Image (cartoon, rainbow, N blue to C red; front, side, top):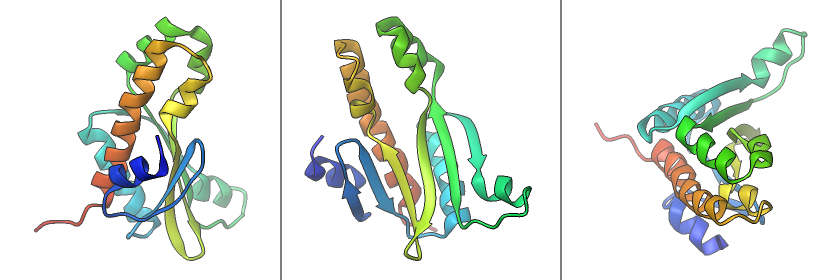
Length: 150
């Protein structure tokens, strides 16, 4: 996927940087609301929220203070079976993740493009799955950051 493709998927949100495998998108919301909206968007797809790792809360247990730093692990059992069926070793790369953090006063959501995550396995089924998941992840972020309609 090219940077232009990623921008098209994200729609109205600013794509800050697109590396070979990383998309970073600025959220119009603060950390808490960004995480809540992403969790809701994951459920709408539907995808499964495998884990919510709250770095802020975990650091606080050790008496440390960190700004927004959370990870949402996302996947679905039928996608997992497709990964395992294509290449068992690719199972190491699931679930896929969204990383939510603050940089320069802005809440950022970052994720590795699934197509790039699975490209290293050089299997046509994983290429197809990666492309499918690229659209799903871009849709999750776009839906989470869409303006609320009342």
